[in-house]
Image (cartoon, rainbow, N blue to C red; front, side, top):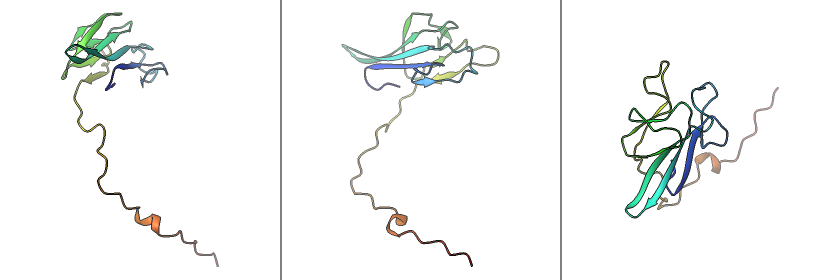
Length: 124
């Protein structure tokens, strides 16, 4: 998901940031878009529904062309959650450590890097 202002799209089209296989025919080409929006009280995550079949947040339909704020713990479903055959679902979570800290000690080269390659034994 975007960690700075911008868009993250989900769908079957190659232009989406998360591309789902064509076998998920109930997912639209561009199903939904997630945006980090900066406001006076900080940033918030907003979902925009672009689909024909609907995008659901915690079981409630957003509606094509409409937006809704998303919160930590929410469930996003790319079809009616009770859809026969299932629906693709995501849970909104906070992930710590997305950017690993810089090492404080230079890493030693792997042991294999210091040893020159050996010639294979010749066939007799």
